[in-house]
Length: 217
Image (cartoon, rainbow, N blue to C red; front, side):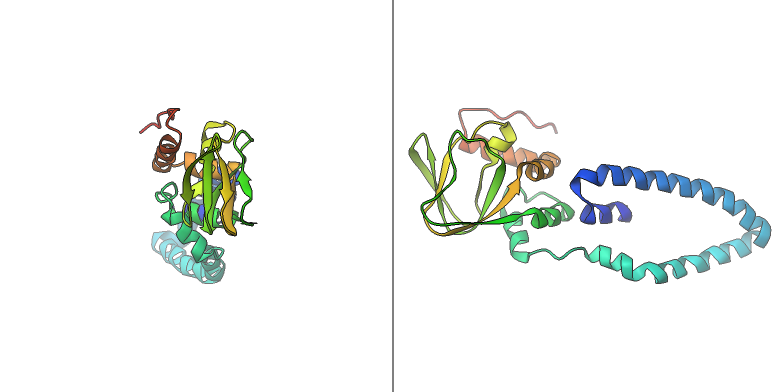
């Protein structure tokens, strides 16, 4: 379990399944080799001696590998501000620590001057945006709908439903955004049941004309 947790924190999303499969295969191979080795060890040292030898090897292994294992446990440093921003957002609140840490590293800063369109209704959507600082206004069919500020987000509808952008979002002041690519957003959100449900709740609130598909319990 500890190994899988570490792999979640340091492994890439697109290779995680293959890494876990390789770890499981290695574990099974180690058990088979250990069973064979135990026979020879018991025969050479008798049961008590074999237990003492194995008990001495484990602390030695930990001593040798502790520094490297500790580095993996600590993991790559992430921005505290970005982490808090993700944790405050309703879509990402339920996600486990390891997933949030990976998302922090995936966030791409985007600086947008005042009065510029970030997304345009009808265009293809390829990114999700979190507002780090500043303010935007949202228009649907040219009609003003709402303002959004720090901690709020936009862009999820096009990604979750694979449709063109349903609104135009324009900055009202110099704004700092954090962007997630489509694959990164969908992998994190759709892979977690509660997060997926909350994301579709946001969609239902903002896009009431369409119903989101049910998310299985």
